[in-house]
Image (cartoon, one colour):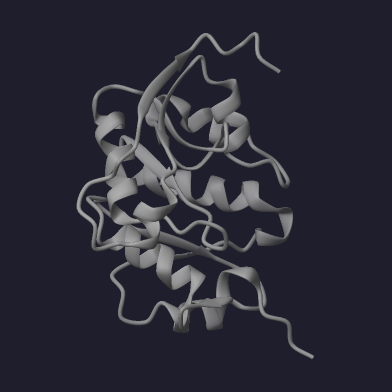
Length: 186
């Protein structure tokens, strides 16, 4: 039997990867890149039909999540972008409002802007060019959250589930805080 990968699970009639990609394409992002690879690539591409995005094949997908991050960061670096927003296509229901809130904080000079959900910092998150080397050094299943945890300063947008559940709402009711000198935390 053929299993359905998490990014193709359907919620309210929409595959998760399409929901996340659609939110990104309606945000203020300059470009949206979807990293694809593995046996379900064609199905993911079909799920995204009609959306304005760049498909970036990752032939090293078997190495784990870090290989997809490296592929996306290398692409952004080669294109001259100053920052990348990383979103997990199989877990997040980020709205364009939430992504724009992250972008506003990044444009104010914050090198790392992460989402906080239940006191955990994670994705979606934006990483400025100064973090590209750290992202490119990730290996295996090590994700970008390792870079968030290692950052000396992280600006935070709190996850407000109802904002993501209702994309027609204008604005995001997120508390924004900057966490500094987190090196002592475990």
